[in-house]
Amino acid sequence: MKKQLLVVDDDADILKVLKANLELYDFQAATAETWALAKEVLDVQLPDLIILDLTLPDGDGIEICRLLKAEYPKIPVIMLTARDSVSDKVMGFESGADDYIVKPFETLELIARVRACLRRSVPAERKVSINGLEIDFDAHIVRVKGSEVDLTPKEFDLLQLFVLNRNEVISREFIRKKLWGDSKLYSWSRTIDVHLQHLRQKIEKNPSAPEYIVTVPGKGYKFRM
Amino acid sequence: MKKQLLVVDDDADILKVLKANLELYDFQAATAETWALAKEVLDVQLPDLIILDLTLPDGDGIEICRLLKAEYPKIPVIMLTARDSVSDKVMGFESGADDYIVKPFETLELIARVRACLRRSVPAERKVSINGLEIDFDAHIVRVKGSEVDLTPKEFDLLQLFVLNRNEVISREFIRKKLWGDSKLYSWSRTIDVHLQHLRQKIEKNPSAPEYIVTVPGKGYKFRM
DNA sequence: TCAATCTTTACATAATCTTTACAGACATTA
DNA sequence: TAATGTCTGTAAAGATTATGTAAAGATTGA
Image (cartoon, rainbow over all chains, first blue to last red):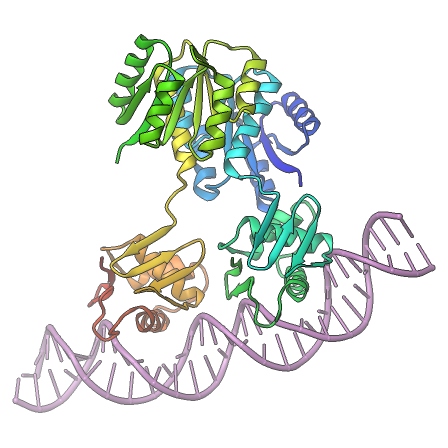
């Protein structure tokens, strides 16, 4: 699954170049020229990393970084700016930035820093085997007590999302942003619930008394393992 | 508690300056002039972060970084070097480095990057454990004296509000604004009191003589710890 | 086209929230 | 002191909302 980035920069040319380069290195990139547009993107999908230019027309970059970290503490932020003074850098890091790159920058260095950030935030897991449930993310194979079960793409993505966030309550809102993202799915839709039932029927011994995916009423679901 | 760093650099002067500066900013710094000495330090203590110069007399820095990451994957490594070419940086990040600083560097920037790295490796505390009451906000689990209790969403939110404002008197008006917000709840409604009673019944040993959530007559409630 | 998958719909059931009613505690006032 | 009013504790019933689940319709890709 490709990593989703959000690039916020007021310079349309830089955006275009960055997006092209990131996609060349196998990232998926959404772009926004203003903070307002960035918020719209964040309303529907949660990126794995945000690249943030400090000079936006509609907001102070340092303040925006603080807001981002307050609302999405887990998403790493790389600051991108022409300001190269030490005090600027210090302020950037203090506002919660995970890295700070000075323009003009080399694309390869940016890519390397993006990878370093992502590596840190999500310890890549290719295989998981716990409590009778084996998952091979590369081969798309799921086994329950040794026998392979056949999952549809959405079911597999859902399971992956749960395993990556195991033992945490996941809201339907979070699932919607992560798995539906760009496509529209109304908040009152029961689609997520239905997929979840299908997944339960395939991996749970007794779907009506789930062992792995438990319901947390009013909050969402939790993958327990 | 002070963060412990390990600084590895073959230049004794730089080591001295770095150590002094780091201690000025409230870090504790062990130093080593060679990879052999660094290994000795690692044998007796695990630092929270390693600052690694790439040009050591007894080993290639890139290789050393790989070894470090293989043995201590959780300890962040900041590379420090005079080599400033993009390919050097890319190699550095690929060998597992978490950040890369080019000499000569500004102390303040180094400090800022050290802080950013440490902040990242120790995510904000999402668990509270006080006086026999444990709360895990991510997993939505509440335990009283070791045994898990089952809270409804409103009860959980209420408890969270109390814990976040512990030892402060909270008015019903404040609770209403925080948990009900714009939805209508008349000021004469007893709903909040009822939820609070339910919460007491679940977390207090003796609900009629509450230990955690005490009533402040005429004012509201207070979470005591 | 077909088959697989995704989404919507509808309804049953479960869980939660809110109201209501009354009892007791406490302070105030006649 | 007794009467009164206000505030809080508590149980129970009713109202509301959330979730489980099957089945039908829509979409997609080969």
